Length: 340
Length: 277
Image (cartoon, rainbow over the protein chains, first blue to last red):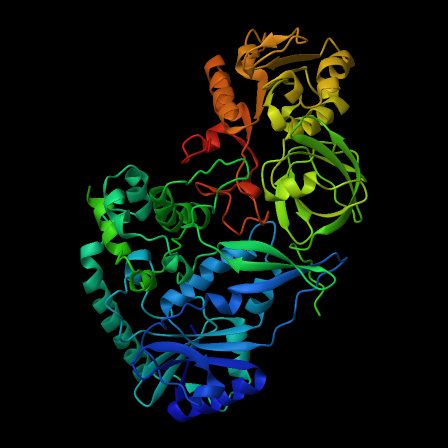
């Protein structure tokens, strides 16, 4: 992979250049030390976070609420969006984008709203150096560093960054800033490898106790009727937090409204945790019971999605563990259904 | 502004005619203002302006392009609003979506259709499509059931018109769960007439469409008769919303029924959770 070196001060110059090109969002730590994503115009700098942000990147491409059509009409155009760059996508975030790309850009129909914003995005990945206690990316085939799915990838090393080029889009951007990007030396690359090994070891170590006995599909194939599900669903309050915070959850609701002289159609996030989610008008409901909805989430992530796309729709980011008011830890649930 | 096609926009359509079929079911003929063809079994999302959409499989012949019939039972918010609409009212249509009946793959076969209630709607589109190319098929046996004689959808077609189309090739068996004084036909659920088929099962197709309980027992009876599982075509009724395989509402195992279905063979779905609900 093409790699360069960028000094700390040249990264600032590069961000300033990106800002002329469009909107720029960077990861930033708040006063409590939590990593979030903010407009670069607000932060004025970029502090290498070393970990994923608390919010997923999903809303950049798939809005929580947006207007998707106005009718009656013979055309309902897709609003053009401004180019934008996100700096600070962790390995799990990159995998999530890969998953959403499968859902929204493949098949007979693309989602044109997602596609427009995805085309306008420049994704800059980072390597994790300070994984959270809830991180388990290595259990779902994801690395705690920018392995793939990025335009550019940053690794913090002494005095600057190793910058890897992951796409044609990334190559063009580097080409337009030739003066800033220096060749990466063997020393730079070995520092990068050191960072990666250290973090991978950390995540491997904390994930060890949750490692499944086989592939997730082989586990799920035997687990549907397992007793451990009913015990684990006990503290679920059906709030949907785990699904709204999930970087790969794709579900949405189409919702129509009357405007002054027309009608508009909105697309808003929805979750399969809600009882009426799959119910049909005639009254039948394939997932009337909470436990069925609870299992559906796990099966979608670890089995159904894999059957369709050959990777899991769980990125191991652990956001759902942090968000759950019922203290349901996906790793522990999976461990229990595996064991029995 | 980009000119990318917006899959969420409904095409404007006018209600051209309304026929009351039963106390709870009406057929609406709509005229879309833009081209929107379909194949039998594919479905569309029908919009009641400002209220929302619901999925329906057209009940008219797919070869008629300028008018599309939707036979709709009043069961929910959208269907109730449609039932209160008259000729001249404006609705929206979006689609067609999903996989319909693969008629080309059925050439030379005998076709058993098992339907119930408003499930007769997609089956009418299928039946009309089959009849238009009847030379391609060996025989059609259509078994249809409703609760009472007044709940029979397309009664005139089922009882009088269709049996006369080609008596050598087309047989109709109509039944009701409960008869009345005027009813001379069979009394019993639809599975009571799904017997003595006289079919070469190795060279036959079974089609099942109806309410959940009927789907379940209709399918079981075909399995029991010896139909291969991959020759039983089901119309899966799930909460199809976006129609484009994204929104997740209609998921059945790993399938998005709006794209992978709604017509699916039994072998594909039989082990998925809650297929009959």
